[in-house]
Amino acid sequence: MPSSETPAPFLLVNGELVPSDTPVIAANDGSITFGQGIFETLAVYKGEVFALEPHLERLKAGAERLRLSIPCSETISEQIDKISKANQLKTASLARLRITVTPSCVLLTSSTKIAHSESARAVTVPFARNEKGALSGFKTINYGENVAAVELAKQAGADEAIFRNTRDELCEASWSNIFVQIGGHWFTPPLNSGCLPGITRTTILALKKKDLPSISASAISMDDLIQVESAFLTSSIREVQPLSHIDGRSLLGVNCPDSQAFQAAYREQIRASI
Image 1 (cartoon, rainbow, N blue to C red):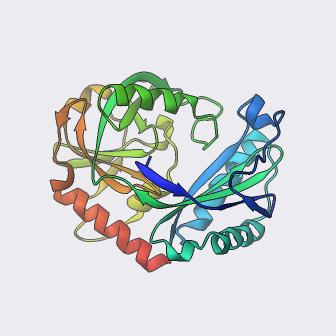
Image 2: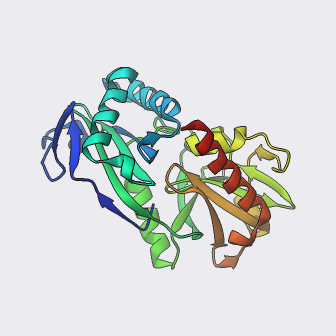
């Protein structure tokens, strides 16, 4: 997650603008009692949302899994425009827009003045993702496991936690997908590892440029992490963030030419799309 950000003054609940400090979710809502809900985090650049359609497709898939009702894409787009204008997101170079769906409401919130470091430190945690679980690969509000992992990482002086799956393979980080370089080759866990089908992950894998190395979506044993030379995390807000350390071991971090190339290519894709 970013190290800091500023909440915007308004939120949108079921299409209505209200001050951001307004209580909007009932105590008996399924999101409170059962953790029943889904969400999407979108990057907004001077009022323009990047990769909106893939986010809405993933939101729809999550809604179907949890039997939640969501508005059509056109209505959500109109709601995004409404909150963007109310919170003046066009004046922000980067804003976070979150769409949350619970049994009783569709909630849009935003924040600006996003700040995060050039690189991050990560540690592996003893918790395993269940790649065969009912919610594997879905972006639900059930983030207790992630919070517990990040707190453990912070105790170890790191920013991010790295999960394995039940096969003891690399899965993902707590707030992001992960890419690693081993023996000069780049890898990222495949979707059957249990990782989230990240929008930024998908964008990186689809980049076609002569100066970019190829990436293989392949199973990676946790034992092989000791051989990692470089690595980076991806998410809508992080974009491409190099890892400087894994479990205290130094990596190339921001000095990795490949990571720099992926960063540049991703930002070029953003500029071309908005």
